[in-house]
Image (cartoon, rainbow, N blue to C red; front, side, top):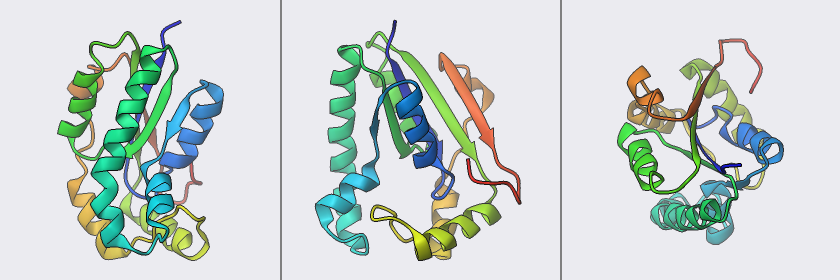
Length: 170
């Protein structure tokens, strides 16, 4: 059986980690969460400058490990967010030479629901839940390029998870 490369695309608070943990068990797969590594390395989830400084390096290391695992037949879940289309395309292109199923999960969650979730998470979150302000969410939301039909068709599998206002988390 072919290993699976699973990219999870979604905004902060969309439920990426919740979905990734579920897939990690059900597929099974190795899950890579940049925020978990960043908080552990920085030692402080409130040190935004340090977290931001290390993000690219952590994601690069995680992708290097993920490629090696895929080549060994192990499925992986990357929960980087993948907001820009170009970033998703980059990973898809990099994975083209690897015999694996390329899969995208897009978590489509309204901004109002995201705000409620990050407010809750900021008050009650776990160790790796980096606090996010409403202003930061606005900025991040402007960077999100939802996948369109032509992009979705470039994956072997895809799923769009839509959450409505008043819905429970994924």
